Image (cartoon, rainbow, N blue to C red; front, side, top):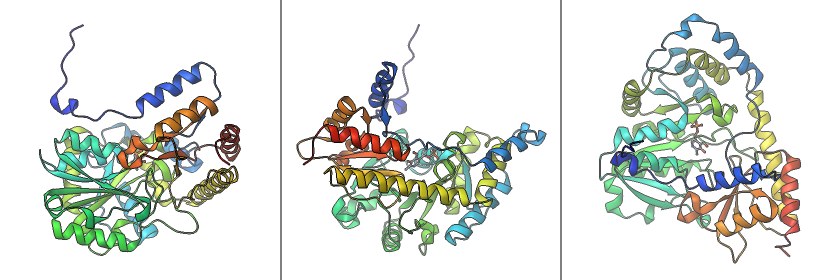
Length: 391
Ligand code: PLP
């Protein structure tokens, strides 16, 4: 077979750090080991029944067997506007301030294609969700990393970024509640972000994938709640986590109309919008009964309390999390993230994600997904306890 050479832009794509881990997990599973896999971010619970029923019902509609409107059905964009008003008291124009996406991941990669030229700078959280980097690499732009440190509540410190970098920057990626650190953002941080973005003419991309998952009675804040936010950026939302719909691939971008127009433009050339029946079910998810979302957050909060409580009981002193379904655990002294993740995999058959896979500032941490029952989470802690690593 002739091997065709990849384009330069594909060659620039960063290596998928977690591919090796996924392969290791697959091999151990096929050897029959009982692994407790807390290394991924794939929600374990099903989509609420009324949403699935809406899909089944609308799959019969012959209108949906045709091409959908290129930018999505208006009823879905209206549903998005209704959702934002109800949940965050943010007003959106469905025609100009909402773009329908094939999952947030698509928008997060496309946005670099939309706004960056070769040599431009994008500011990225470190640690951060790896796909931001993929879009930047395809656009042949440069990255400037913003360390997320515990002493700063895992928020970037804009004062530490030099003025020249800020002036060159065209995009700024943020994500709160945060994957992987599980931190949340305050309104004052978002207000400061608007000021910085205005001053340096930067487009803010707030990834709000975990926008529904906040604990201890704290509802996560939308970036668009900050005064002037729409002037300087967009927010990306997904149904994957809020409604356990990761396989359905529904997301949307909201906010700055010029950016929404650019996202719609690139999508005009890449796709026709989502299957109409999926759009109808997505609208039902956003505007229908929200009790399943409430129950989901209660479930994750209980899992968090059980897991963190049990770890502290065996002597692994770890802080609690504020949002997302992840916990960010400092590794014990004497181990790197990868060494400790390997130890837990080899000796306890517990899969975790080493923090350095999310960026250099993630070194010294493990990310654990609370995506298993409380019983399995306790079993994971029991296995870790048997290693006798803590006093
Ligand atoms: N952003 C963050 C921070 C995520 O963790 C994920 C999924 O894991 C996504 C975006 C992608 O979501 P979607 O399923 O909508 O592509």
